[in-house]
Image 1 (tube, rainbow, N blue to C red):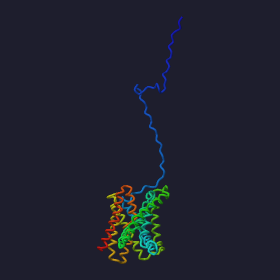
Image 2 (image 1 turned 90 degrees about the vertical axis):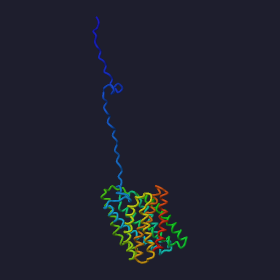
Image 3 (image 1 turned 30 degrees about the horizontal axis):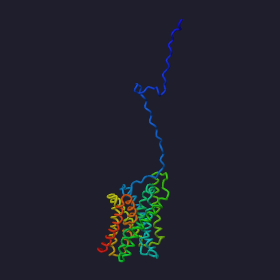
Image 4 (image 1 turned 60 degrees about the vertical axis):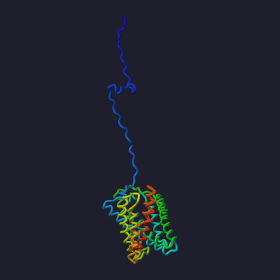
Length: 329
């Protein structure tokens, strides 16, 4: 007698990935979640500058910039007068009274080319570069001295060659020294940075008058120190509004230097106390060697031809304007 037929149970199909139904067989595949990117924490940095020097600021920013420039300009003019008197009284470089201030101002301009300083303390940075360095160095007096030394051909060449080379050398030295300084990267709010910025300027303002007396500046030197901020602020206005016209040729500084040279040459025929005040204070601050050097170096990184053109034309045209102003005046 045969055994009854018993149907066998069919094995369930494997459920591994190889035998899984594909989307084309009528099964919808579930989308995979996108991988999550790791969020990296950025290191704390100093606040970004409100605006570059050549960009117009708001009226509030411009007012604070004028305050910082005025404070530092007084110090720049006083230091230039003191170094000039010391050079005149000594036996070294007696005929180059403007060489010492121009060298020191160009060196400091190089030191202050710090991005962290510009970002954290924008008003102090503008005051140091435009006010202190810009007024410590003077383009008009240097060109005028070169023209006056034209009676002797050698004296003229020495004035021009020394004035066109040494400031660039000390500027690069100062920039290298500034690169060695630690960056300003403290974790402070913008309001606290602003308070530090203003505190520095107020402290400098309070120390200026005693320091002027300590370094034995004469009463006649107080007036040029007061006229210095006017020339520095006018130069800053020219730079902010004219330099953007041609980024490769700094029209604002070029015009400021030529105006100062023209006034100095014209006042040559009218010697007097106030002529000295204007040439030393106003014209000495309206014109600048340190900014001229800094802009030439910056232009060189973009276009060598424009940099040489700006550098040489400033001196050549300045000498021509000085001679013409002396003859007409």
